Length: 130
Ligand SMILES: [Zn+2]
Image (cartoon, rainbow, N blue to C red):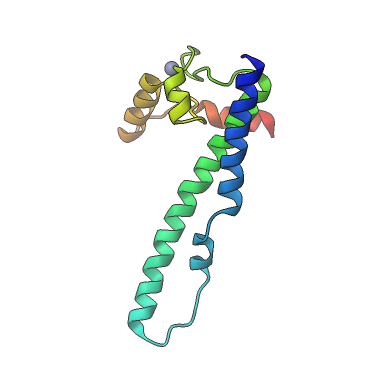
């Protein structure tokens, strides 16, 4: 990868990572508060469930961003982890932490939806780095 592009990708990914690490106000919602009214309690419980779902999504995204940062460093950034083809620049611009090209991403999601065992390259990557 061209150095300039590498620096650009790193900058975008690090900004996103910082945003995910610090920017969430949802965490506050998870704190259990004492509600006098039952309605408030119900409302808070719903807020908490939404907040937990958001956190789930954020921590998954954070993992993806961190994986992408590692790939910037080892030079595999921008290459699909599944078919090893170059991921089109348009997709990398839209999703800078994308690990797969669109056809592979769709295949993986289809397999997951069907409950099939999916080889998770990202997971393997993480374990190797740990
Ligand atoms: Zn692919």
